[in-house]
Image (tube, rainbow, N blue to C red; front, side, top):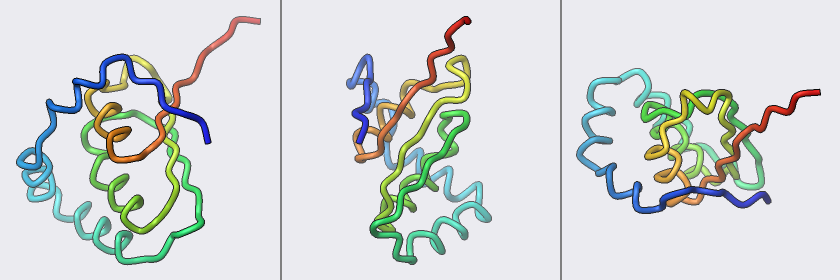
Length: 104
């Protein structure tokens, strides 16, 4: 498995359970599906998410982790990557990778 590289692990402290509770409250449909995913058994399964790393992906990534899935999250755009979210997900055992664009 690829190891995550986070520039500043102290960013994790910027996210607290109150913020996550509020997000779950204001997004009931997402929370519904998170509960469904978390109740399934994805042990031994690998899940790759390639997209914007923003606060709103945390509940689903945590639900997948709770279900036993191995998760790798890749940033589709470094400009839309929230470093706080990335650091938080790494602290929960989720691998974060970033794309490097090379000119040919």
